Amino acid sequence: MTFSLLHLLLVGAGGFIGAIGRFAISQFINNKFTYALPIATLVVNLIGSFFLGILIGAGIGDKLLLFLGTGLLGAFTTFSTFKLESIQLHVDKKWKLLVLYNTISYGVGISLAFIGFWIGKALG
Figure 1 (cartoon, rainbow, N blue to C red):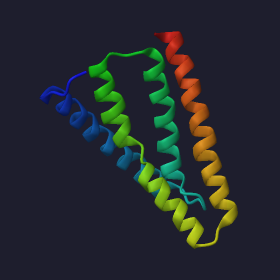
Figure 2: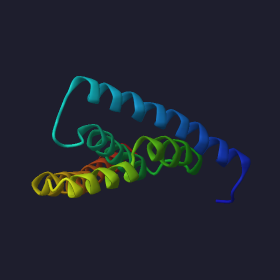
Figure 3: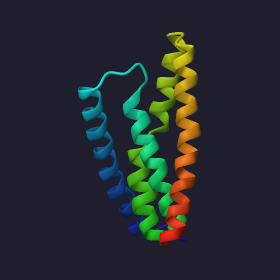
């Protein structure tokens, strides 16, 4: 796939929607619930992993993948915030929460991506 202005616009439009979605969901979760774990980041990352698995499994076209996968889900999920929150748990010496947060984020995230992939394969 060659780079074009259309590709840039697809990623940008998807990213705009994804960032707003992440912000809205994070605000809702953080305003309604209080957890020791950074639950808002965990929820958006797990949702994003699942839906990206579906997109990849379904074998959607390049342009739709740029919009939905790279743009929307790329902006919706947040690896940098996940890492920052992990570092904060480490600095605060909350070892059990750190291990739990990382285990859920990686283990469940990868599992949901695989489940999504197989669902996408079945649908595609």
